[in-house]
Length: 163
Image 1 (tube, rainbow, N blue to C red):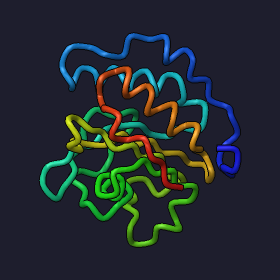
Image 2: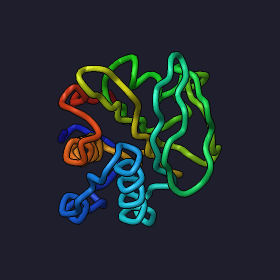
Image 3: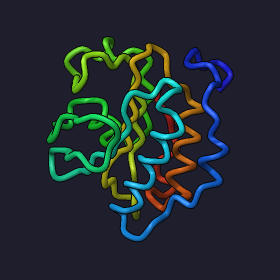
């Protein structure tokens, strides 16, 4: 991770690791998760955080903070690429994705997408956006993946990261 040109180490994940993020149903846990991440990082370069669930060749919006987003979305965007590649994506500049980017908010410049697995089947993604280019790093991907594991929202199938 030392060769990662992305964001400075400005996000403190320790308070999130100390929180009980797993709550009741998957939907309740997703809501708890986005609320916790939003409260922790809304002033640390995160403009939006939410979940999309896979349903056939589309993805549907789940719990999110703090503004509306596109739904359904196709599998051609960053979220769909994370699902089909079965790996987390750290996208330093969404403009480089061209037609492969689904722009729900044109102010967003960077994105972190982590696919979510249960029994080796991808059921959705965590999507985190920022108004800042180079907002996310492989450290962010690793920390978010660990939080998702602790919350029971993914298993160990999602550990590779593509930059």
